[in-house]
Length: 329
Image (cartoon, rainbow, N blue to C red; front, side):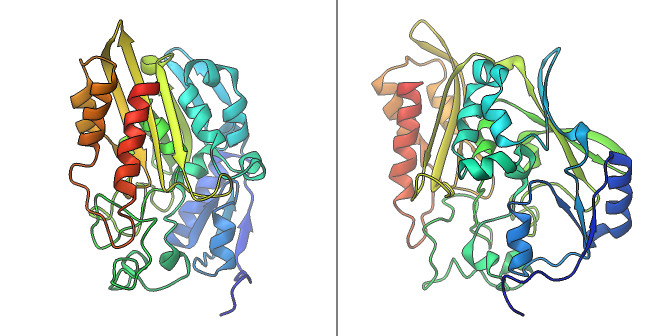
């Protein structure tokens, strides 16, 4: 079939959650939720995804906006990345998320793309995106993980047949903020810790998140736990705009005097999920905030890493980002 020509589908544009849930329940696995459309339209044009029903949820106002709550903030899944960047509460109390969102793609995409879409997007592996029958697409091989495969963007950790990585810039920031996601379906509503939202190929090789057919991501909740902490975010990519991270890092640190009393750190671009750097946290917590601690943290960051043919550079890159996060937070 030709590329850049979408297959036919039925388009639904509900204006409330009840109607949206009815449609996705009716069509099941043949339905596709579309928010900002930045990821969806690529899939449709390449004919790699051909749903029978596309449910455009942009008309559902309850999925939009940012509000303060008694224990933090709640961000509607359809809130644009630009709105996240410009929100005064996020900038003041949860600045790592604002910084991460500002590193996504380009201003044009951030004006349309949503926070929910950014954390829910599918793998960006070239082979998978092109429509080849890899493991993730239901086949029996990983084209990236072969002697001839181009795998410089792929994982250092957690490979299990598939070596694709989490492409989201905002996901590591939400992990360090200890966020939760709210998911709705015909059976009701549930709230899930953000780290449980993302899943690796060892759990389900066909998905990047726990979202099932019939599920709609409603909101993201961020508690006050890390409000006002020392934050750090950095993204390394081939281009400054319109590109996915080779490696990105987010950290939240609490310091008393010269002592790091608590820390959360997560890295993207190195595993199929945003990688929580628990080993680094254990090394750093209780230590002095100095160059020695930064060096120890960097040295522990790559424990368990297994480089592929062309991504060895990610190991020192990741170590240097960890060092800078400790030193410059």
